[in-house]
Length: 264
Ligand SMILES: [Zn+2]
Image (cartoon, rainbow, N blue to C red):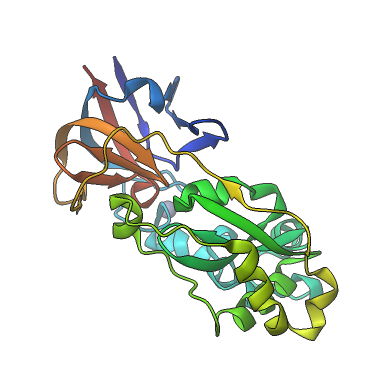
């Protein structure tokens, strides 16, 4: 089997285990089906996800110019507290920002190696947790827009991490945490402005990743340095492919790379 196309983050579907899909030019691949098979990845060219040109990818699948121009990469995406659409203020494209920011968002706790707080659109649950490789998560608050989620996260970050340790996530050095207890502990730090949106109800949600074998150490595959790689797929967690030789490949951070993928 041979697939070809520009890499985009894997699609996923909740299940036991979670199902992953890679979308190519004229085909899609259910990645779970190729566990225990040899994958050959060859980097062919860049293809910016906005302009389509063969230009080095700067961040998030975009060439440098597009990254600084597209409304899909505004600062408010990584820092939700900078959202301004609720004030009718434009960052790069007010119409797009209103569409994305002015919809229900959630603040959550997710545990991928240790507990962290995060923000996402309500429609992105549980996709966001799957993408982070979290094996358990819980909602803290559901708010009407991105700004309110952002200021809640900023307040809670004083008391809990907001980072994922991807090496621990991939080697499965994970602690089981009582997220209900964490939510209770953090409640006093929810800002007054968003306290009415705090969620007392709702338990932990668990994610079951398709991993046959976890590596002890990980080495990350970077296609711009190693344009050709072959290895046996042993698992999928977060947005990572995990191979038998401890190589891990972050599909999401290789967005915009046009590749061929051979399976044998
Ligand atoms: Zn571009």
